[in-house]
Image: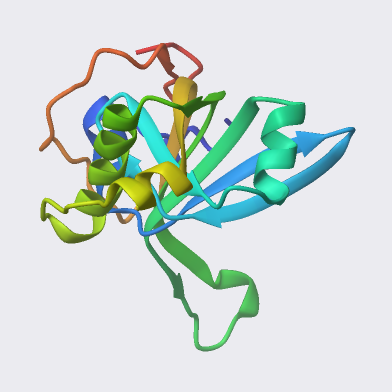
Amino acid sequence: MRRMEKGIQNRDIFDYVMARADVCRLGLCKDGMPYIVPVSFGYDGAYIYFHTAPKGMKIDFINANNRICFELEHEAKAIPHETDACKWSFSFYCVVGFGSVEEIADPSKKVDALQYIMKHYSDKEWGFSETFVKATRLWRISIEQATGKKSKDKPAISILPVAEKITTIVEADGRSI
């Protein structure tokens, strides 16, 4: 990371961003062609969950290559400068990570994944019809490595419990935490 002072230094900030981001952007690649797509998502402290229709471009790319990159941000906003265009800046938290994605086939695990997605946006338990669960494809990203950045105006946060399943969170200086 070029700007070491912006690196997220602890797991709590990583989890803070994951819990509060509105959108997860997936980076996929098929036959050398990159594809980025925003998805609604859920996070359980170890995995990212998302859903798709039965067919589509995301599925074509995942079937060709299950390696994935993801990006999320929280509280991103421009900070203007009245007189100097080169002094505009951004205030933000962000996380970028890598891993692999696999489809969830078991109906009860699909319902669990849907609950994680809906809980991320509503904090409510939902019921899902058997027909809906059967027609919806659900996916789980195993996070293998992630880094995060925050603008210098953002505080260090220590509010969420640490999950143990992520293989590597990389600090700004390149060390794993």
